[in-house]
Length: 538
Image 1 (tube, one colour):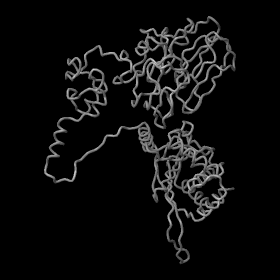
Image 2 (cartoon, one colour):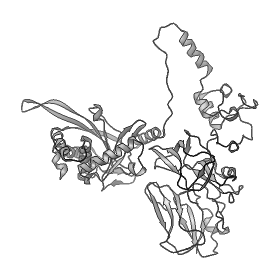
Image 3 (cartoon, one colour):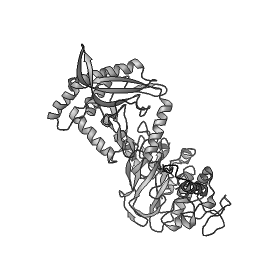
Image 4 (cartoon, helix red, strand yellow):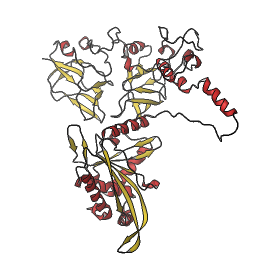
């Protein structure tokens, strides 16, 4: 009996996988243990092994396309065996798979994007917006490195994609000519949306765009570089107000522009379109100032000089990183039940120890490095703090991966240092400098920011004495440590005044996982390690 091959779940955060390569083709004999394909997940590219003996009868997803976890990818069975009944009702891949040239591989109706359009003979492939991080919902085309008409080889870099984490390169998986670009530089596209087409010159790629689900086609206001890629709407637009355009008989505006204008209460007739043929697009509505506001501003400027200036503001578009920060922190505040604990640490011995260690260390050790190391050791001694809430259970981690908050011009990123408790201070210092440099240069990769079990945020270098932080990701961790600056103060001991250096640490805890006494015990351990820093070396 034929057996279906489904997309396996290869990591705890994986929702879909991309076929990086098929190592077998339809008609090949397959044995249990053979490598069928290479799957690109949200973590890495991994081999997919066959668990069945037989012949590869069907491939439903082509190289470079994404498939949801548990969706059918292929069928293995006996030569000539009828497998169509296995495919009926199966979940479809997240992007439609073109049919194989062999009759045995014709895509069944559930998988086809549109039964009315036959795309099997079109020698072109769509390029979709890839999932480049576990929290990514859309990507912005930062730069196109190729233009329509350019020759493309597999492995060429097509574009740079701005995600919620970093700017990353988009690699081509097909050879051919770049026939179509559907998303302009600076525009956003959701995951799996079609952003380009690669194929033979003259290929009818329009049929691929028509056959694609509506959710994968590019936004209507985006104009392709080839004129024929944009078709004029066949039905009259809903709005009766005319605009200055080639026809002057109806409104030429994208659906998104119409919706935005309706929300703002703006008449489309007053807006000049910058799109093809005077078409109104989203940016035209965003940049439009109603006449009433212009007149009000003019009247204000003509009024007697009673005020010292004119009110003004600037609308700043959200970057993918800022959207992700807002989404993540809002989720944290709505789920974690947090509280804070603050403790003062005497840093006199830590200051002396750092001077001595830097005389021998090949890499300069910072106070932040010492704090990270102390947190790693303290977490091993207080494992309940190294835990997270999982709805129906608590996950207590045996490993210590600490996120290090790094401020960059566009926002905040949190690269992760792995197995912190096992790293010598000099190695830890080199690792933090490397990750900090990558963060500031936008070179972090997904593996660099995933898997934290605890986070440290340090604003001491800015002169901040004390602050509280929002838990970075309650699904991964239950605490975040806020580190203030080292300050010299006058203290009293046995009736005598003396100068000393202190630092304040504030621990934000998720009360669903960590109780007050548990958090306090962690801070006591941390205080002991920093006030007696030789304990970090043993």
